[in-house]
Length: 150
Picture 1: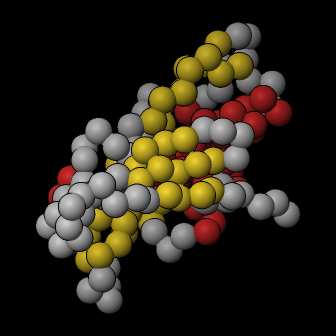
Picture 2 (picture 1 turned 180 degrees about the vertical axis):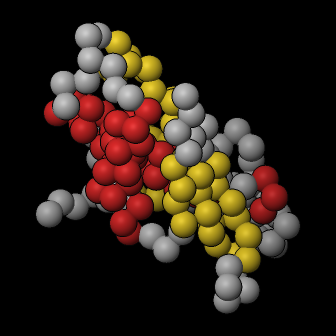
Protein backbone atom coordinates (compact mmCIF):
# COMPACT_ATOMS: atom_id res chain seq x y z
CA UNK A 1 0.00 0.00 0.00
CA UNK A 2 1.15 3.54 -0.67
CA UNK A 3 -0.18 7.07 -0.48
CA UNK A 4 0.06 9.61 -3.28
CA UNK A 5 -0.35 13.22 -2.24
CA UNK A 6 -1.07 16.26 -4.35
CA UNK A 7 -1.85 19.74 -3.10
CA UNK A 8 -4.10 21.80 -5.37
CA UNK A 9 -3.95 25.56 -4.89
CA UNK A 10 -6.25 28.12 -6.49
CA UNK A 11 -6.16 31.87 -5.84
CA UNK A 12 -8.63 34.32 -7.33
CA UNK A 13 -6.92 36.76 -9.71
CA UNK A 14 -10.03 38.44 -11.08
CA UNK A 15 -11.81 41.48 -9.61
CA UNK A 16 -15.14 39.66 -9.40
CA UNK A 17 -16.31 36.12 -8.93
CA UNK A 18 -19.05 35.68 -11.54
CA UNK A 19 -19.14 32.33 -13.36
CA UNK A 20 -17.98 33.86 -16.65
CA UNK A 21 -15.32 35.92 -14.88
CA UNK A 22 -13.30 33.98 -12.32
CA UNK A 23 -9.97 32.45 -13.30
CA UNK A 24 -9.70 28.68 -13.62
CA UNK A 25 -5.89 28.43 -13.36
CA UNK A 26 -4.57 26.53 -10.37
CA UNK A 27 -1.40 24.66 -9.45
CA UNK A 28 -0.93 20.99 -8.64
CA UNK A 29 1.97 20.58 -6.23
CA UNK A 30 3.34 17.03 -6.30
CA UNK A 31 5.56 15.37 -3.74
CA UNK A 32 9.13 15.78 -4.89
CA UNK A 33 8.61 19.39 -5.94
CA UNK A 34 7.04 19.18 -9.38
CA UNK A 35 4.36 21.77 -10.04
CA UNK A 36 1.91 21.73 -12.93
CA UNK A 37 -0.39 24.58 -13.86
CA UNK A 38 -3.88 23.30 -14.38
CA UNK A 39 -7.07 24.91 -15.62
CA UNK A 40 -10.47 23.96 -16.86
CA UNK A 41 -10.62 22.84 -20.47
CA UNK A 42 -11.13 25.73 -22.93
CA UNK A 43 -14.73 24.57 -23.48
CA UNK A 44 -15.29 25.35 -19.80
CA UNK A 45 -13.59 28.78 -19.80
CA UNK A 46 -10.10 27.47 -19.06
CA UNK A 47 -6.79 28.22 -20.72
CA UNK A 48 -5.57 25.91 -23.47
CA UNK A 49 -1.92 26.28 -22.43
CA UNK A 50 -2.67 24.63 -19.07
CA UNK A 51 -3.34 20.97 -18.33
CA UNK A 52 -7.00 20.32 -17.68
CA UNK A 53 -8.23 17.53 -15.36
CA UNK A 54 -9.53 15.47 -18.26
CA UNK A 55 -6.12 15.56 -19.98
CA UNK A 56 -4.43 14.64 -16.70
CA UNK A 57 -6.82 11.70 -16.34
CA UNK A 58 -6.03 10.41 -19.84
CA UNK A 59 -2.30 10.96 -19.25
CA UNK A 60 -2.43 8.98 -16.00
CA UNK A 61 -4.07 6.01 -17.75
CA UNK A 62 -1.57 6.20 -20.61
CA UNK A 63 1.41 6.52 -18.28
CA UNK A 64 0.29 3.68 -16.01
CA UNK A 65 -0.20 1.35 -18.99
CA UNK A 66 3.22 2.29 -20.36
CA UNK A 67 4.98 1.67 -17.05
CA UNK A 68 3.44 -1.79 -16.82
CA UNK A 69 4.44 -2.55 -20.43
CA UNK A 70 8.04 -1.51 -19.73
CA UNK A 71 8.17 -3.64 -16.57
CA UNK A 72 6.75 -6.68 -18.34
CA UNK A 73 9.10 -6.26 -21.30
CA UNK A 74 12.13 -5.92 -18.99
CA UNK A 75 11.16 -9.07 -17.09
CA UNK A 76 10.86 -10.90 -20.43
CA UNK A 77 14.34 -9.61 -21.33
CA UNK A 78 12.96 -7.59 -24.23
CA UNK A 79 14.62 -4.27 -25.03
CA UNK A 80 12.33 -1.29 -25.56
CA UNK A 81 13.91 1.74 -27.25
CA UNK A 82 10.84 3.93 -27.61
CA UNK A 83 7.23 4.00 -26.51
CA UNK A 84 4.70 6.54 -27.71
CA UNK A 85 0.97 6.66 -27.12
CA UNK A 86 -1.51 8.93 -28.87
CA UNK A 87 -4.17 8.49 -26.19
CA UNK A 88 -7.63 10.03 -26.50
CA UNK A 89 -10.30 10.47 -23.86
CA UNK A 90 -13.93 11.09 -24.75
CA UNK A 91 -15.94 13.44 -22.50
CA UNK A 92 -19.65 12.89 -23.03
CA UNK A 93 -22.83 12.12 -21.14
CA UNK A 94 -22.79 8.73 -19.44
CA UNK A 95 -25.75 6.36 -19.05
CA UNK A 96 -26.99 8.51 -16.14
CA UNK A 97 -26.92 11.66 -18.28
CA UNK A 98 -23.91 13.09 -16.42
CA UNK A 99 -20.78 14.39 -18.09
CA UNK A 100 -17.92 11.90 -17.70
CA UNK A 101 -14.83 10.68 -19.48
CA UNK A 102 -16.62 7.55 -20.63
CA UNK A 103 -13.95 6.13 -22.90
CA UNK A 104 -10.21 6.30 -23.21
CA UNK A 105 -8.40 4.79 -26.17
CA UNK A 106 -4.69 4.11 -25.79
CA UNK A 107 -2.75 3.79 -29.04
CA UNK A 108 0.71 2.69 -27.95
CA UNK A 109 3.52 2.14 -30.41
CA UNK A 110 6.61 0.36 -29.16
CA UNK A 111 10.01 0.12 -30.81
CA UNK A 112 12.00 -2.94 -29.74
CA UNK A 113 15.65 -3.72 -30.45
CA UNK A 114 18.12 -6.46 -29.69
CA UNK A 115 18.25 -10.15 -30.40
CA UNK A 116 14.77 -10.89 -29.08
CA UNK A 117 12.00 -9.07 -30.98
CA UNK A 118 8.50 -10.09 -29.87
CA UNK A 119 5.83 -11.19 -32.34
CA UNK A 120 2.60 -9.23 -32.73
CA UNK A 121 0.86 -11.85 -30.58
CA UNK A 122 3.53 -11.49 -27.88
CA UNK A 123 3.06 -7.70 -27.88
CA UNK A 124 -0.72 -8.10 -27.66
CA UNK A 125 -0.20 -10.38 -24.64
CA UNK A 126 2.03 -7.78 -23.01
CA UNK A 127 -0.66 -5.13 -23.53
CA UNK A 128 -3.35 -7.43 -22.10
CA UNK A 129 -1.24 -8.12 -19.02
CA UNK A 130 -0.37 -4.42 -18.62
CA UNK A 131 -4.01 -3.39 -18.90
CA UNK A 132 -5.06 -5.99 -16.33
CA UNK A 133 -2.41 -4.75 -13.92
CA UNK A 134 -2.71 -0.99 -14.41
CA UNK A 135 -3.59 0.58 -11.06
CA UNK A 136 -5.38 3.52 -12.67
CA UNK A 137 -7.44 1.43 -15.11
CA UNK A 138 -8.43 -0.79 -12.19
CA UNK A 139 -9.61 2.29 -10.28
CA UNK A 140 -12.10 3.79 -12.75
CA UNK A 141 -15.42 3.00 -14.43
CA UNK A 142 -14.23 4.45 -17.73
CA UNK A 143 -13.88 1.93 -20.53
CA UNK A 144 -10.20 1.79 -21.46
CA UNK A 145 -9.29 0.24 -24.80
CA UNK A 146 -5.76 -0.54 -25.96
CA UNK A 147 -5.20 -0.41 -29.73
CA UNK A 148 -1.49 -1.12 -30.29
CA UNK A 149 0.00 0.66 -33.28
CA UNK A 150 2.56 -1.28 -35.26
